[in-house]
Length: 411
Image (cartoon, rainbow, N blue to C red; front, side, top):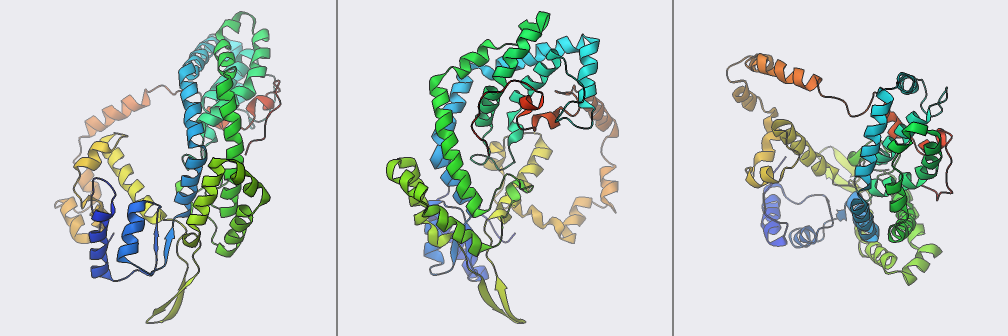
């Protein structure tokens, strides 16, 4: 960590003096990688004119996705909130679980299923009550289809609607089989939500935009659904192949036709054209004391993003608060330099005369620690063990042999 500043809002007037100081202290960088903020673009242009300057591919795709279907996504979220559908489904799930707990056969059926080697295809038939509970919980936990990239790569509200739509026909059939327990399965709120024509129209429109967005996402080979790196994903390193795929996407007949007739796609194309020169970095030859070294500029600014997330995790562990607004407002400008505490002299201060961290931690009140640990152990789990695996199963109702509607393809 070389240096940083704390500013109330990102603007070129405050960034330019900071970058001048960086240049004075360390000289010109070999290349720059940053997000698409107007302030940083203008500041870099003034302080480092002519130097190789690139934008983060992750931020570029994120910005395009938000522009393309951000409004549609907000509309879907607003409609779902208006219908209070999640509240009704949680009420239904709670009632179904209570009925299962009071019925030994159903409880044994649920446990037997969750303890089986495979959850994809039940080895023994499940009771309608257990099926209904599993599917309702599966709908509620649609966020498990996300991959940790955030919007627009992850669309939990959109996925929630699709799961609702997919499961409804099967739930109707289950309700007829549930006899005395049928009243626990609240289908009227689902029917009302799915009958919302404005909501359904928005979902269809967004589905098409997601298809196009995911084509560009695939061409750029970053933040892919099969990635295990989440926000740390750096994407593929084969820049030439990526460049050729993006060119093919940009010049395809489909994109040309869409951009000619739809303003949303026209804006997407303009965004690609505007930043084209800053998207693809060729390898840079650097002369060093030991010879010439070839460097490939990073495709993302993940180095800084990861460091910021590291600081956030530290504060959340310390304070227990998810929101960091007050913390960021009140912390000292040089606080991020705590990363440099690897310095032995700083460790001396932390140890405060003790030989090891273990001795320092030994000064903590063990009675209080045990009390908090005991309280944590008593917290009731929201779902039974292995339910989290169920929530990740695509087309789960189909796996249970339930009736399904004709569905649009999902990526």
